[in-house]
Image (cartoon, rainbow, N blue to C red; front, side):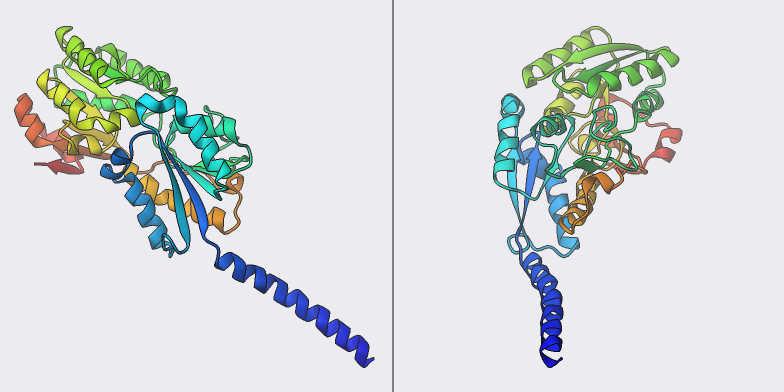
Length: 331
């Protein structure tokens, strides 16, 4: 009887100590987080997106270098064809989760892996892009945050109309390499028709091409410019804002980085905050959650930011109606 009790106690002790040992091992693990960003490292830092993610991890109690390391891969626009190779590098580095920056990197990762967890900080439409079965229950290895809602693009036309009441012709800057842009353009064109505004499409995937396109739109009597969301454009916000100003175009983008860089206006979610929120998804996945069980988050707050100095240079006097809607005025 004593021998039997000894065996039972020994088995009980091993059952208790094994999970505790495993827990201690996991607690001491240094997690490897992949960071695949469509753009330069400089643009990821200066826009606050990469620092916001690291800040989100710190606020959750993680210490970089002690609890986690980041495997960084940045893809400048002229090196986009290297994205699949960079995705494979992250997979071969045996990262625990990848943070993806946008629609383009999401599509590359979708082809690269069906098992490694991927958190997207920004994407246009995860259902249309085939990343999730539903927002509430993605079901696969992708989850994260939506950057845009389709209804935001008609709002860009509306905001420009408030800034330029006699608006009759707008140019829209798009990147032919961005798979999300056709849908964005459709929304803008529908809103423009409703407001009796003509749309000129400007394609640009090089800085020189953007400069030529903006100048051409001005020669065709465009009065305003909508800059679609694109990581390449983010790299050159200051230059694009300068092109618009040089050609006397009122301009708007969906992220606050643009008026901060000298553009006229922005209307949309806080993209840096999306990166900060993405840390909560990474945290849950590191603690054992499956990405397919984590609901995709949609933006709930949209900010209107205007640059008064740029408005003064363009001879635009913001109406009281516009200013009442404004969340921040950059002087």
